[in-house]
Length: 629
Image (cartoon, rainbow, N blue to C red; front, side, top):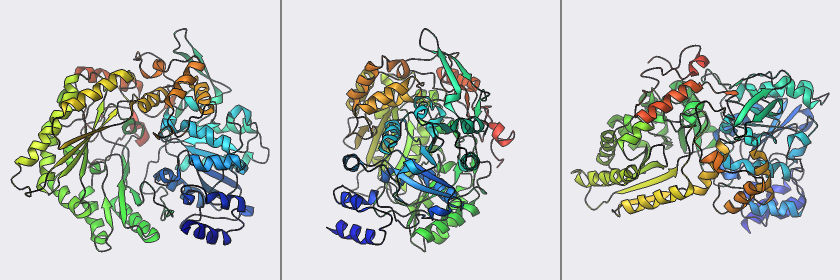
């Protein structure tokens, strides 16, 4: 009844924003706070003074979407313009969706409670492939045709960005245009173009002009043809569209817009804290890691800017924890200096710092000393493979001795819990490599008990978490086959049998979801039919175990006459045309082929600060990959 009182009070103050029918429905759902809006920091504007209404859609539940940094940045950026009102939209959970459909309530934005069908632009962020079915479901909940060809008017325009747009083809029939790369500049360019075309409302004229904006991909302007063996024969641009579309990047992170306030949710979210971005890109070249390639080159913020922005966020939100965000935080070139500056004020204000993504090979005693001041929980590292041979194949560039030295340093600093991330199904993997995971974990356990400085009576816990390798576009392993489901299950069982110590716990991700992820990661636009068929059969929230309907997906593939193994379990020839070959993320195919060949030779490639590897991303920095240090 506490929620009933809170909702009643809240809506008495916002009668113009929420109709009474919706108010009553919220009393019947699990977490009403997902749908109310009105949080501290949310932006409400006068619709009569707005030229463009933008619905920022995250195709997952509120708690996940509100933890995402990208939505915070673009929400703040768009709302900094007086002529734009950006509002948030999340996928309603199954209990809320059922009530919305029963009572004919369309999908609405949190700030105004207006149907997103009334907005000018609907923008989706695509963070993972298993959210694709939710994109279709959200469009349908809004009362809109899911296929872009059936939405003939300019408004609402449906666009999408995010890392999955590096291969957008499985969504090509549903999205009007995709934004490739980083969105701060190009999104505003698109909004300005939309304003110019809005009076006439000619969608095709707008899309043709939008295709000339660097970083904008209009899928309807490209024609795919196929060979008899089902591989792609040609990707042909139409009506003067560019043959290749280059991603957008922000060159100077010190000058780009960053929020000085975040929306503070009423309910607990996945990452309920302030987040401060410190750099983009990655100096490493792990051959399986898509993010490490598509976000190149590395660009860092200065410690002064980071410090100032972090202080502003904590002051405006009241958060007592701030996370330093990047792909590999310990690779920030001035990390110890930054931590020293930040600890000078966070300690006094009792604000804790979170350092995700620490590297094993640069975890120094000096860094440990600072980490101990800001985090007392266990440490997490990612060796990825259990043997040195396989770590060289994937270009992890860490040795077993470095792993053990780092754990020794952690144990001497008082830590008793270590979490290790590994992958199963990596190219060239053998049963010996799988046994190596168990052997490495056991060596770490033994190392703890050999430590003369350990506290008596305290035991160690080494947690081993294994995921299934998924070959991704724009990586050296984009050519590789994923192991079949049967093979992965056998490897999981072999790993469990190889672990003999009770001090080691083993967890693994569901291999069926990884299989579907692999299908859509490298799929082409023929998968649009499968996606639509699966959605119509009830598939949604596919990344959630309670909702995932694997049998429905397999039936959809069968219904459409498409073999999912063709996309997931088939090795590609170097000369094959990939569904993303007309998109330019700065990484040349020649470089990816070279790195793939080196993997099979067991040869490693140094990181970008040691030597430029000629991947192609240097063109985004006018010939310079990273700053000289």
